[in-house]
Amino acid sequence: MTATVAADVVQSADVVQSVDWLAIAPPVVAAVAGLAVLVLDLFLPEARKHLLGPVSCAGLALAGLALLPLLDGDRSTFCLTAEPDVCSYVADPFTLAVQLLVLGGAFVAALLSTASVRDERLPAGEFWFLLLSSAAGAALLPASRDLATLVVALEVASLPAFALVGLRRGDRLSSEAALKFFLSSVTATAVMLLGVSFVYAATGSLHLTTVADALPGEDARLETVAMTGVVLTLVGFAFKTAAAPFHFWVPDTYVGAPLPVAAYLSVVGKAVGFSGLILVTVVAFPRYDHVWGPALAVLAALTMTVGNVAALRQDTGRAHGAVRLLAWSSVGQAGYLLVPLAAAGGADSPTEAIGATVAYALVYAVVNLGAFAVAAHVRTRSAAHRVDDYRGLYARHPLAALALGFFLLCLAGLPPGVIGLFAKVAVFRTAVDAGLGWLAVVMAVNVVIALFYYLRWTALLFLPAEEAAPARVARSAPARADADSAAAGVRTATAVRTVDGVRTARPVRISAPVTAAVALTGVLAVALSGAPQLVLRFASTTLL
Image (cartoon, rainbow, N blue to C red; front, side, top):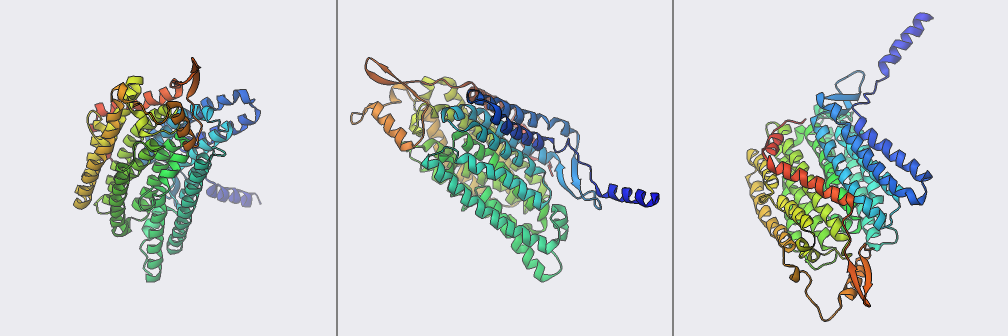
């Protein structure tokens, strides 16, 4: 009997898997911080709810610091007992790079949110819990190496984002944005799950490496099922990455969401979609590169063209025009990010092209978050938040204007923002090396188109102060401001005071967290522009 018990113990030991807690620390720390905020919200009095913001920022900072012990080598956990090399969670260079992007982007968004939660009277407990939950899912996704974990991580990152977009209660724009975002994302998830089910039916496995070995199968009928599954899975991720023609939800969602949430979606949401797209194409479906390679090339060309042309047509006097312009710019940038993925389909070593996408995503994250940080400051002065509201910003806030001008030049790829130029060169080079000369030409044309609206916005910052607010006889300034606020449908943080019976606007000082966000992104952008060769070196690194 003793021998039987010993045998049972040995057999159970083979089945039970040990968990590498250090490997999974980044998403776990973010998730634990979210639970801690949820519990603290129950006990903190209303006067101390503001403490949830610093606690959330600290949680994201700790999650980012948890990446440091993982730099010594690849780690994996949740592996099959029969096949130790087949794992569901892998912490490799690709995972760490994307987790750095995700957690860093969430941290900057959290800094911007501290003032927004207070000024717009958002429910603090719910906001911070949702943001941390979404960040935890986003940090889990790049480490996922099976389709089930990939889908779960994607939904954990997406579902809280729906609520964050619609958290401004009673606001028509916010509710409409949340509904559009929800419906488009649910549709994408349904299509993707159908594709995943077809892939599982054809291969009998959900692990990405096993799926790659099993495709294509010998049975012609299963080959058709597998091909359909690959296409549907790619379509689902195309929604998540805001690739045209699946981009229609982006402008209205960014406009209706609180500004820090829009910043979060533009960087972290995009990183989630692209990291998932990289994993399913390069790791799971490498033998179908003749299918997804040309398809992604067409999507890249269409996406960058639609985004840049739409941004070019934006009216600088339109309400919410600044955020809408950043939204269309985000769509255009998504097209650039798709170029190396398309090139991977025709490259001898697909994994080498992935470095260019990740390098560009890291650069884009820094400068785009910086632009949103300055926009968060200007937003406190004008509820309408038009591009014209940035006229003469240099006369009012020189440092903010210089920072925004630098970020816009980085996005345009012009000196002194040479880091944007080098990132575009890295992407351009992958298209040329893969023989996609036509796509390289389309990208070059779109870069020129984007120069116009980036430079137009930059020029507005440095107009003389007397041209910043031209006099209008038809409507008084206070009445015009009130009308713009009403049209915007949101609260404004601009204070109003009465001097000698005349209502005048009192400038709102930039808050300390917003200042920290601008300074952090500005320092990183300047440092990267000082050593742009790092981008090319990183782009040539094999991450997977």
